[in-house]
Image (cartoon, rainbow, N blue to C red; front, side, top):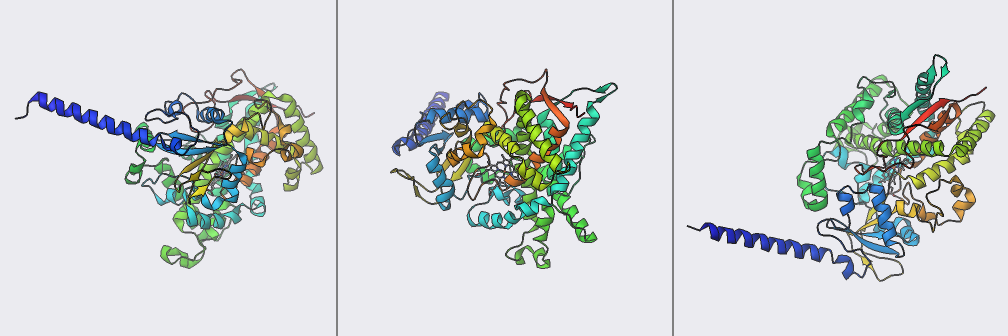
Amino acid sequence: MISRDTIMVYVVSAIVFLSIVVYLYYRNIYSFWRKMGVFNIEPEFFFGNAKDRVLFRKSFHEFHRDIYFKFKGHRYAGFYVGRRASLVILDPEIIKCIMIKDFNHFTDRQTMRLRTSKYITEMLINLKGSKWKKMRSQLTPSFTSGKLRTMEHLIDICCNNMSDFLNDNIKSENGFKPYELEMKDFFGKFTLDVIATCAFGVESNSLTDVTGGFASRVSKFATLSITKRLSLYIIILFLPGLARFVPLSFFNMKVIYFLANVIKEAKSYRMSTGQKRNDFLQLLLDSESNPDNKNENKQNEDSLTEPQIVAQSVLFLIAGFETSSTLLTFTCYELAINQEIQIKLREEICSILDRYNGKCTYEAMQEMTFLDMVLGETLRMHPPVAQLERVCTQDYMIPDSNLILQKGTAVQIPVIGLHYDPEYYPDPYKFDPNRFSAEEKASRHHYVYLPFGTGPRNCIGLRFALMSTKRGMVHLLKNFSIELSNRTTVPYIYSKHSMFLKAQNGIWLSFNKLNTS
Ligand code: HEM
């Protein structure tokens, strides 16, 4: 019979032994960049360099901006998130090589190999190598200016609904009264309507729909229970190897299956009635229309399967919803603070619309160069995506250095840091659309402005996002003035709990009817 004391000795020895093993393991991992001769900040046990973020002490955006300035002065620097090592690239010339010139060494992003549905794994954003290349070239024709122009009228319906909603709420017995609302919620609904109509063929009016329709079901696509959230967090940070065995997803799968059904129903309706619609869904369905494609295994080389179509439509919602509504939110925020810029922008919009008989045609929109500048500056100061990622897919020597990156190493492009670097943007906290005049843009390094990423794997929805945002802004500015309200916090406080760019207490602004007499 083993005595209690002996058991205690075994247990304590085992704990000490395990602690030493874990300690040596982490010490070895955290010596990676030092051994490579790469500058890095001393990592902390378990957390690497990400303690402030993991413990929610800083927002995602502030965290990445601060890291950039700790590395400033180096062309690249080593970084650890938990156990994962990545190289942060600061030199715009190296960024250009990685994202464009030597893109064939960096075709992929780092994705978790979670055990999840095809609707997630088949999304363009998650594909790698030749599978990504094929899907990207199949989808690219849907995003040409010509194809997008056919969707303008669908977006205008959403813009009119938005104006009607504001008009109804601004009206009062004695004329008009300012209407105060939270921008992220407001523009989230508008953006959802735009994506619903263009990617799912669903005409929704989320601003007036309070009955639990499409919008309210779908807006919960990223809502996860605390247990699921925590499990994902632990796996990502400490046990990434476990990911492929655990049936977990970053998304609320109930919403994803609901969306898959919406698409299946729209498809069968269109097939039974022969009805076609000018939207993304039609473009995707057309590439499936060969009858041979019904059998997934016999499909034509260039056609899409049903899970692939669902995956891309859902991806357009996931990739477009948060980003586009954030851009609209912060554009209005900056215009409310900078009234003189708002007035100048409205003058541009109204004078151009006058020449086009009040019609928001494609050509009219092309002429609104100051609007482009305002959106450009908003995306500089408030980029929805704070950093870009690539994985080295073939060993690569960093230009003008002796550093060889091995296959599998992650690289990060610090978008938010570059956007706030006074070397490229003097007085970076000042909202100044003139930075985006043709001359200013030409005088700056091209790769220090990356709100949509760059190179062959940049944002495929860039044109669509700008087209819908610009049309939304034109409808708003020609009818309403945008003002700060009692509830606006300037400067806003970044939310520490969101992965996305969010203000802690929301962005509250007031809309008022313009005096057009
Ligand atoms: C203001 C709005 C938007 C911003 C700021 C934005 C930004 C970005 C960024 C930074 C990336 C990564 C690019 C890179 O790694 O180089 C990206 C990728 C992507 N975006 Fe957007 N996006 C926006 C709207 C949209 C919309 C409306 C859609 C769809 C209709 C969309 C679809 C995608 C897709 C599918 C990818 C992955 C591309 C690939 O892996 O090949 N985005 N976006």
